[in-house]
Amino acid sequence: DNAVDASAFQNPATELSLGGGSGAIPSTIVAGKTLSGVVSFTEPATTTQLTSWSVSVLDNGMIRKATFLNIPVGPITTDYADCNNRLPCVWATPNNHITITLQAAGGYAGNGRLTTNFHVNGNRDLQVAIDSGATAIGADGTRFTGRTHSLGNNSDYQQITEEAIANIGVSGSVDFYRTDNKPSSLANLALVVFEDSPTPRWNPRFTNVPVQ
Image 1 (cartoon, rainbow, N blue to C red):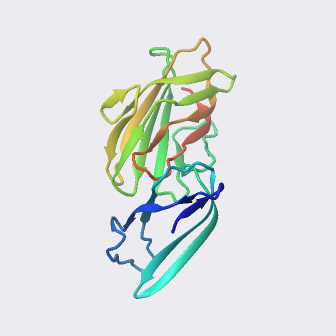
Image 2: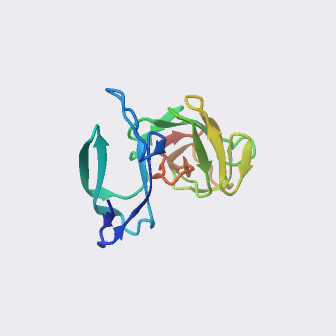
Image 3: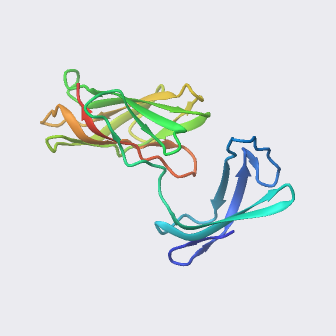
């Protein structure tokens, strides 16, 4: 059905998929397992909430319609991962299908830049992207802005994409601009890492990160 946003706009569905195939082709679901589906809409979301949306599934000849109300529009996220001044530290999507492990934060003794290293892992093959916009705030209030980043063997200051194999994943890093202060811990670290697809984006954030 159309998705109705908070301004009463009717956004029609344009593409359907179920279990990796067309939504028009039957897919088998195994008892106790989940079957993923995707519905893409004609227009981008213009509000932070959908008032209502319904989806109908044909189950062995019987139509089953599920209706959802007051759906938040935004990234797949948990609030944050509290590292408690210890690394490695793991952030995960709410369903735990994707994990981002912060492996190291340091670099002062090398080139004087704060550098963070992380690893993205998922339960399926996916295209992982990283883009500019990473930020960090030191425990003393020092603000860091991302300068360059890497994913796999690629490095740039703009968006790059790399394939992550299921249960193997891909590693990445972010180098930040130099600052006068060199705090020994970060109150907050936000990475712009996401799946390169139209699905809701991750919002990985780490707090209480030690800088070693």
